[in-house]
Image (cartoon, rainbow, N blue to C red; front, side):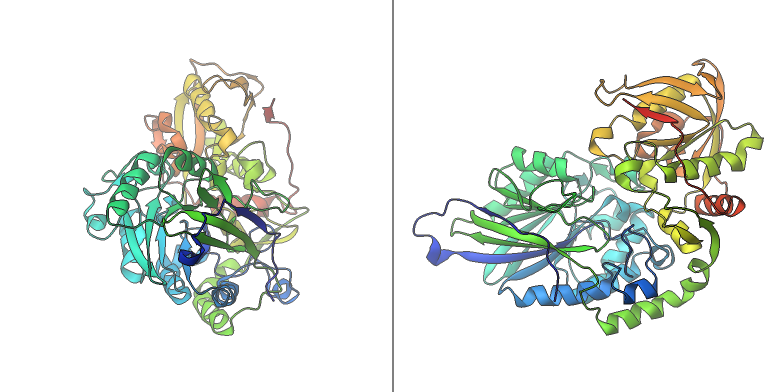
Amino acid sequence: MISRILTTTCALALTAGAAAADYSLTILHTNDFHARFEPVSKYDSGCSAEDNTDGKCFGGTARLVTAIADARTRSNNAILVDGGDQFQGTLFYTYYKGAMAAEFMNKLGYDAMTVGNHEFDDGPEVLRGFMDRVDFPVLMSNADFSGEPLLAEALAKSTVIERGGEMLGLIGLTPQDTDELSSPGDNVIFTDPSDAVQSEVDKLTEMGVNKIIVLSHSGYAVDQRVAANTTGVDVIVGGHDNSLLGDMEGAKGPYPTMVGATAIVQAYAYGKFLGELNVTFNDQGEITEASGQPISLDGTVAEDTGTVDRIAELALPLDEIRNKVVAETATEIVGDREECRAVECSMGNLIADAMLARVRGQGIQIAIQNGGGIRASIDAGPVTMGEVLTVLPFQNTLSTFQVTGETIVAALENGVSQIEEGAGRFPQVAGITFTVDPAAEVGARVSDVMVEGGSIDLAATYGVVSNNFVRNGGDGYVMFRDASNAYDFGPDLADVTAEFIATNTPYAPYKDGRITVK
């Protein structure tokens, strides 16, 4: 029987006499799945078959099959939608790109999804290949993609589906800074989310659709702003910042979070939860009741055997790579996003140290790794290459270059400019120390920058190593695009990190105060 998280219910004032026209809908939703087709550990990384048998694992597509089927039996009218970022995160994506996600999303019977920023990680080509394979619409309203031939005729801003005799309008929303977060190319121009949503709401309303759901890969804070700045949106199904909503420990807010008459939901990430929102509309299309919960897909949820077998078949080409033990770690190496996007974290230190150690002999003094590129923790004990690749799944390569001290300070300011939002640009570093004051004005948050024991010289030139995503302007690091002597084709960052751990095994994770947060 599926275990449940505590339920939060939000009931709005019922309109007198509307009961006869009430329409009930169950919205089942996922977000930020990141190719976690197999079960994951409590650290969001791989989980052994032994631990899975012992009930210590979470999620996996085989549990989703069971949970979704069970949830559908509880509703006369149900839809299944996704808040984006099905792509990227494990070897399954590296090997199969979007094909495996398409196969299982079709099997699960999704009705629609929005484009997440990671759907652009391999450019519009891979996204289009995925769209050609799926049986449902893929949506993105806040972008002009008319100049991108691969998307212009295939991608929609919104769609209308029928369920239980009623028409439902669905609108897609993607991060406005996707051009900084991923690789959409020069032909996709992203626009303001509130304006884009309102434009699609107006079109749907003119068509007579009065029940409107936004699938938003934009983050909890942006979703609340969109709800406040638009009219006519009934539900926002969120994603992007891995927010868990509900009454449980660690939740960022209630499930649903009500902003005016709009119900906002999100269900963490990695397939650990299935969101289940039950809404009731009156005949004017207004929500009169909204209640629900994220369903925990823990070890008590049975795995569909056919799905287990199919995933095992698809895993065969990957097993030799990911099961190879490369090192050991004395304790957990923490790569949790709550740490690595806000403060010094032990995984950030490991990766930055590994980068700098690899190229220090080339005159490189400083390493900068974006916290958003760190995707998981590694538990104590043997470290497999599969675990390393789960932490660093993007196939980024080492980039070396030269910039002035002034540029480095500007890069650090960019890195901490969105610390309150948990943005992935937060810098994990080696060879450099600094202090950050999150309460200070953006652009003036960084102080006490030290390189090799001395204060940074703004006019001097320093050698830097990062990954090719950051060096080419990703996560807002546009100041690195014009760097001198740039070389973006070094070894894979995951390989560099694995070799560093192997050289220093058993590895002892640590933090040494290289980043001070006031």
